[in-house]
Length: 446
Image 1 (cartoon, rainbow, N blue to C red):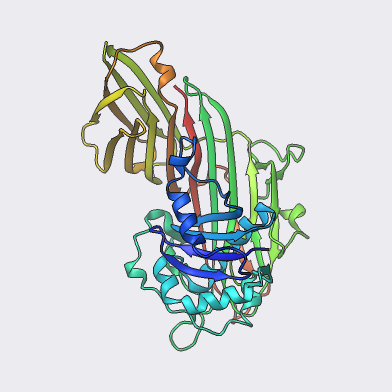
Image 2: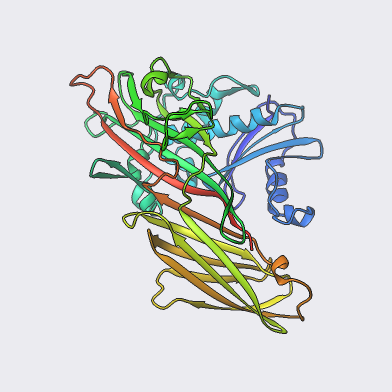
């Protein structure tokens, strides 16, 4: 049970606000934003990020950040934090299904539709339903489309594939209520295989820990609720006891959406489902089986005098040259007494940015794109405000890296085919599949 629900912009502007029970004082949105914005000043946490749940003057605040917007719920009673946080995530996904695009502009243009959804989802603080399909019968306002040309470019990771055909991700910015000109509905179904990988390297470059958290997301624009069959690798194994031969993909565990039928999954690794409207996770999985990490990273820091040191960072892309990684950011904490940093990039480097964050003594190296098979090097000369004491290696690092690699998945889990169970002229939809690998925690120790 919640008392209030509201959505704030990055500036703290109140975009949507609903008070269901009148138990929490006015001004709670301002209190929340002030607390989150200045959390570091009132907390010993070095990162300075507010936790997803905190209490101020007897009011419990729950919040998640989606697409740069703060989705917040408040209550004075003791409720399950995981329940409320899951509710906020589902509300965000529900609104995205109906608006097509989740950003401040779409909220402001469709605030009547958003309030209509909220009134159906929550009644007097109690959740009624968060099903996109069920709510279609109770929602009557039409969404106002946001001009996708004014949206920021999404980059190569936003491209869907169907054989050699390509489809930009703006294709899935349609509302589940939207039709094509003439009242027709374009029959399409989109599948995302998204993997977030966590790898820790030691100082010699050997892998200490590795893990993949993956999800198969689906967004359906199909009419008539046809049954879909989605086939995965035939040699896919679940659990270490399910051995399927050398080279097989072995998942530690997985779970499926409630609409998925597993009648033939144990036989041929085929999932059957009637996809509900909107976006939903078909399958979530976790894998700790040894896999080839997409990047090898290492750093070396050496003393170069009483008040100087030199850092050398190397990153090598261990994937096919036909694949490009983008939005790469490498960060490295430096000794607290670092006063100045001079950077040296390799000859011919294009699309690189370097920065020294003096406030938290952190080196940052950004690369716009890395082609598979290539290697890149950065040298940084450090100047210290005092003489070195002890081992400089213990005062710097570890190295961390974030990236996005489209059309690549480290686990080798594949969608072999996606088909309509009962083919007909009425149901021959466009089917698009996209693979994206992202860094969850990619760390190299010095």
